[in-house]
Amino acid sequence: MNVLFLNGPNLNLLGQREPGVYGRATLADIETEVRARAAKLGVEVEFRQSNAEGQLVDWIQQAAGRFDAIVLNAAAYTHTSVALRDAITAVGVPTIEIHLSNIHAREEFRHRSLIAPVCRGQISGFGPASYWLALEAAAAVAAP
Image (cartoon, rainbow, N blue to C red; front, side, top):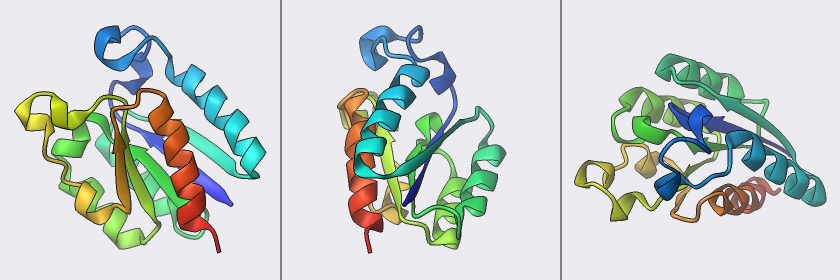
């Protein structure tokens, strides 16, 4: 089983960006922990990050036939990107939306996710554990 982890804008700044909201773990720290947990589950994972919406769309489109599930932290694009939503719908790869912070407990504009209706589920508010929970969910969703 192969799971693609896609990370959107500013997630390359984890560990230094608003640590009170996002914590001190870097994206590399999170990836290391996810890889260790994935190995125990027999799951292959690939991590990618881009600040560019179009690059994320390209990666989602390329996931069909290569990955059994996508875990997507679209970051700010969660609330604005019809393009990501359309790509998720078009490829049909089960997608799990994740967030480090609880988007529903933050500013009003963060409460609405344009991608949630086309994702299998949403995990938010658990810090780095959101990624581990998403790995478990992806393995369950993609299991034969």
